[in-house]
Image (cartoon, rainbow, N blue to C red; front, top):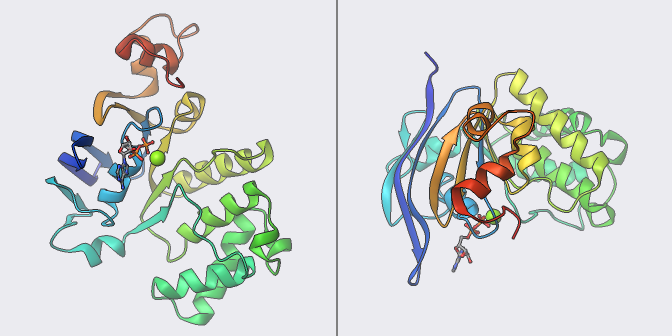
Length: 249
Ligand SMILES: Nc1ncnc2c1ncn2[C@@H]1O[C@H](COP(=O)(O)OP(=O)(O)O)[C@@H](O)[C@H]1O
Ligand SMILES: [Mg+2]
């Protein structure tokens, strides 16, 4: 039986009158890639911000590794790594200095931060650019650095919020391969995307989210086979069938 690693129960968050997250519950098991797939505005980032202790839920309960985000946020933070949708980088610093800085933020000493930074740059195919200023990097390279930073401190659960939006195919493939490599090494991942091909390729299980609510949750295989013959059905068809709308409206 797989071990429950993150349990989210009945989460709600409104901004003014707008219900951004409207009763969301799911469990992520250790070692899986769990996808939140939904269109822009569905509530993916708001959900992630609550799970990662950045934003307080209006209602609901979350545990990560058995620790409550409300009562034991520090313990939760020590288990997680976050790659935010908006890039969080110092453009005037080199790649390595950015990574060492964020490594120090998660409590690594200087030597360990440098060692991890180099290992993660290697993983992302950016060792040659270690000394380069991040401000001069392409969008795809910045995304890869953003992901490499999330790995500092070797988190057990990684949150990736739309990590491939607006980047070149080479960077996208590098990110896919990195994620698959991390999964092979036992990392647990929450992945959000509005690209169904990505969710289909990478995720062990997917929750389809729309209007702040989860409308279906299963393996990509099971979601598709509910609709029709697997060779012909895509997750886009699943979304269309459930909502009457296309994913990328
Ligand atoms: N800080 C905020 N203030 C007001 N509205 C917000 C805020 N953050 C998100 N929203 C709104 O909540 C809804 C869900 O947003 P978000 O979680 O960012 O969706 P997604 O990440 O799926 O695109 C959207 O309608 C968005 O405009
Ligand atoms: Mg978002």
